[in-house]
Length: 367
Figure 1 (spheres, rainbow, N blue to C red):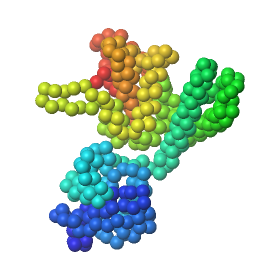
Figure 2: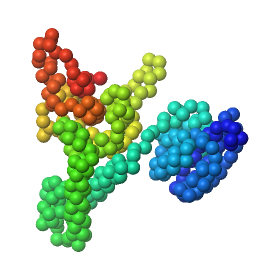
Figure 3: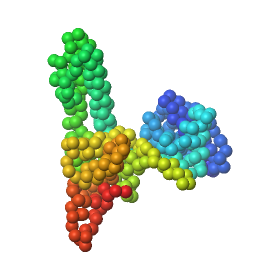
Figure 4: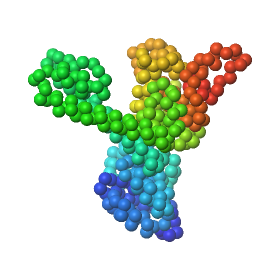
């Protein structure tokens, strides 16, 4: 049976052990197995069978497992876990059932798995630098909040300052009785700041040496070395998207829909895709709409959106600007255009017979 028909295999990856279920073309189970999640074990198992279609869920081990199985000649589908409601809503969920569902979906229609694409090894290694920096930034923020909160219990306050200068500008304001508790924390914050600054220099060098296209993206206000490089490394290939507008949906910056009949309620954004890049884009949008944001089409459009009223209008405007920013960055990257901050506004002032919207203008036009 292994030689005369194609197998459809579901592989539920665990940290220590993985469960495997194989189906023939008729949908009958031909094998069930439990094997260690190691390269040697998987190579031994899959090198002994003909080329087949293997479905796995995205996760900590999916990258190296998919690369290993692809080298052995198998078709590998890495399923988007968020789209597999059939699995994570199963009232009798367990590893063997998950593997069987993956196999059956791979047999019926690979599109049901919403397969994703893992980025290349170099891009993954460079993105690891950015994510390591983010971990240190979050750790520093947590320690700063702890120090400020602890000082407030003594009816005192630490002075306002940037996170980078916190360990030096607040040391003299710490109450005497809290010095034994906070001195080590201030020293740790200082050490974290030095490490973050070292990562910043490394990220700038990476962008300069390997990703010169980040210069185009950094022309947009609020987009610095970290955001531009994270954007390039996360999407990796601008040709993945037929239209720039598709990027907003890929990063989970579009509203969810639950339309049925005459009912079509307004819902929150989907939050699919890369959460870290989505957070960076939202931070850039906050700067664009903030008091120090320079005048540009994105800022003007976002401020008008925020004026529509309601206590959530500013939040909706920030998310909307983040979505438009994601679309605009993809357009600049794909077409190699130089960013013009007031391109749309200047076009609107030209005579009607001369005004022709360009591709950049269309990229940031209201949907």
